[in-house]
Image (tube, rainbow, N blue to C red; front, side, top):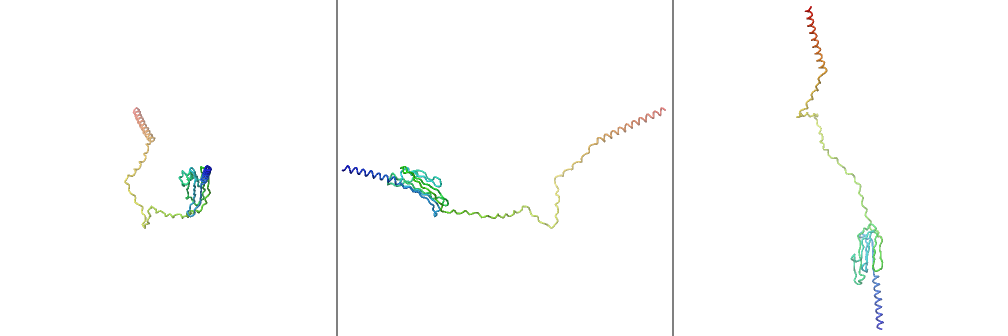
Length: 220
């Protein structure tokens, strides 16, 4: 009888352990929400996961950009002490997204105990209207004042204008160029010398003729 009771008690404890283990294994609590807060003027993504074993991982993307990736241990979130095997939890929030435009997001949890991946995601619609940028009004071109002339103004006078007297120059004036000397007339000079020679020859001939005539007369 005692053996029967002991065997029944052992079977009950074993079954209870299996039930507790199954309950612990199915105690994962993954959550992820997103929305747009018009009062705060921002959109947000919030991710929480509880009762996961060591090595559970999370990946978060916003607008196709990965903003979180790693295991619960690596990201540093851990809570709960009642069930040491499933004490890891994760919690994070991104609440500075632009509320004037739409955003896409995904949160994915993966557990190493074989329960698979739990995915969340969607689109956050804008809840704040962007204020239009005021267009600059066309401005008139600035009026440019004429710049004062640097030339002195001419003051009219009643007296007749007198041309200024020439100012004598200290520098000596350029000497006039000497008149071009006429080249000696060689041809004329040659003709004159020739005439003189001919005249002298004529005189000589005349003298000779005169002497000859006198001698002839004396001889007669």
